[in-house]
Amino acid sequence: MKQGKILVVDDEKLINWSLVDMLEEAGYLVASAANGREARECFKTFQPEMVLLDIALPDANGMELLREFKEVDEHLMVIMITANADLESTVESLKRGADEYIGKPFNLQVIEHRVKQIFDKSKLKKQTNTVKRILRRSNDFDQLVGSSEKMIEMFKMTKVCAESDCKTILVLGESGTGKELVARAIHNHSSRSDAPFIDVNCAAIPDNLLENELFGHEKGAYTDASQREEGIFECAEGGTVFLDEIGDMPLAMQTKILKVIETRRYRRVGGRESLEANVRIVAATNQDLPKLVDEGLFRGDLYYRLNVMCIVLPPLRERIDCISSLVEYFISRLNSEYGKKVQGIAVETLEYLKNYNWPGNVRELRNTLERMMMLDCSALLTPQYLPLEIRHQAVDLNAITPSTEAESGAVEIHLPAAGITLEEVEKVLIQQALERYNGNQTKAANCLGMSRDTIRYRMKKFEL
Image (cartoon, rainbow, N blue to C red; front, side, top):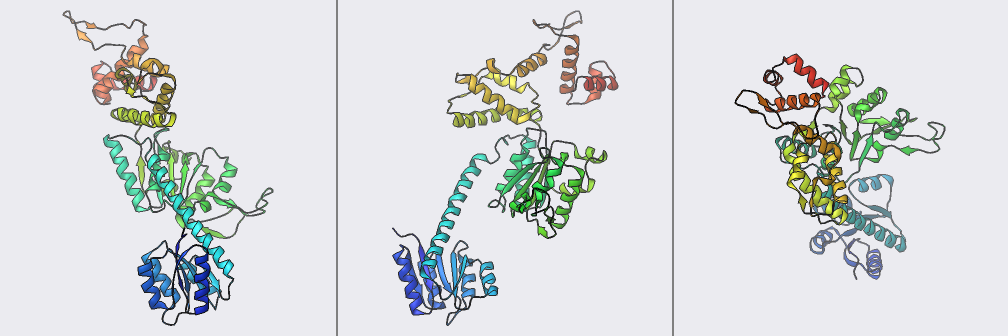
């Protein structure tokens, strides 16, 4: 079985014949050319995967052929061969896309070994890219499901950020809304997708270790630094660094991140050499950054640098109409993950989910459905296995039935069988008034016969 197609280009007959013979013995399909004209013709007709190319040809320059061939096939593997190997020509050929540079005279066994290594590396890269594409399809925009106006705007902004290759992006949203998923989606749909995506939780790493984690250190930088170590910025070369919970980053570290953004350079801890930061920075937080700036807890200049492109993820309670599609999506994913055959969710269960305010957002919804699917063996998920807080909140919201005017003019209110406190009644009425008037506090206050200051006090009291 032939292992690959190789074109040998060399004007010295003995070398050309030796290489062809050795490669054919190794199982490769081989063609040969003795000059530039033959090489160009053979390249078109034979369409090799690899070229062994002599730099000095009677009618062409090997470097120029290398450029021509790589323009046609950027994935072409090339080994340059020359009788006058020097550092300058070696560097130049590698810059132009050559995989290897070998000087004459050479050992045929060494050539055979290097050819196999380069083919193996190329094969592994293709397999890796295939796996990445599969993973990308299964994880892209995971949990970022919905067709509400706010979600459509978020999707549009994510696409713009991915395609524009802007160097800094800020993602804002409550915990559980999917900020890391947005960052990964931006990376996976960008020109940087083949480079690493590395995330770091700024709140989870002690202040004194964060700089070392991001920038690495030189040997001897501190007591236990027995050898040089690369940091996240260095490991993510060409890719994306996701700084999660950046609102918790200490001020001293904020200054250094600002410098990296402005100069695109940084230094390892204990180092003197400046290294280039060829990465895209995506920062995320669930905190109010302008408020932190006012309180002196976050640098204003860093905030404005990060806020060039900003994506805001709406909380789940502001897109209740997305719950049905999210439930359908998660049931399908969890069925595949656990080998379940759940067909859907009961209407009553869905109403409970829609009446809950989801402080943990989409992450909490997924966890709730996962728990129910582990406990409920029926085809449709019933309210029986819903967490107590979801059932209790639904009871609170529906404790008071729509009031009707009796003939005497009195308001008729139905007391729940389980009973209810006056504070709970007050809370529910204020919620309903605010919902009726789309959050307008003045109209809601007039509806309930109280002042705007009173309703604001009650809203603060009940954490509405």
